Length: 378
Image (cartoon, rainbow, N blue to C red; front, side, top):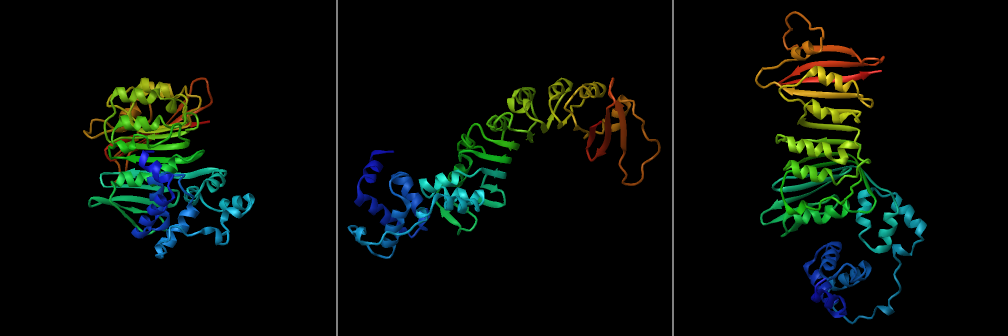
């Protein structure tokens, strides 16, 4: 804290002057308290004391020397037994508790005593907006002239002169950094490059499933490595950019990938890459233009945890079709012309050597891609 803020914090007259300023601005009381706390310090004054002086000043009662000792002691929610407070906060959803925990230290402690789990957090940003969804509640901060507009459920729209990412993250960041926060599914679609996202997630971040697509593959890798390895079960890692061999190697070397159970990505993997997928139950990925399908079959047949996968191969130049795959696998290819709008689908079963289990292949052409779905039949 700078010296001027420290001086104000220790001077009762200066504190009340700051409150008077906020009241003259006619901001909503909680926004005024947040602005006041950002200026002079989070612990400068309890919310209840701020609220008392704020409403006196708002109603043009400007006596700084008013003696509150003569007033009856007001009853507050903090006069309730701790067990009753816990019961009340138990009936709030996680989003409502994030608001409540910012009131004061005592309520924060009660709020944090509950498990803090979201089913899904979805964060998206582009050049002019930042939006986030916490379970079924939607939030957004949008570029508006030289400032921004902030939209929060059950609150009037807030206009600000601040940069939209700065303002939006003032509300989002405290949620992401709550202690003991757990998320079933985290979705990150970060298409705006900005230093404001350098510390978007605390490390480690506790999520079971994550979907990541950002302005660069390196940024996506940075976000992925913030996840808690082992706890993270499923990864969806995609990009509109083409993955380089170096980027693929970095992804496969992450602890998050090596301890996951399910992976989806549009990166094109060769046979040697697939050797590193033996720990997965399921996966989806692309295939390069030239690949040995017999070797892919033989590699997957050795995977003990394997349940299913989907492999996709582009066919923009009409230089490939599923008959090529079927021939490589010695599958039976249907004869005769296809009916109008009928797609060619080839199925094939391969018995895993020295086993009663099978790999079932379903090969299909859709648009400019060939899809190969493989299931283990036990």
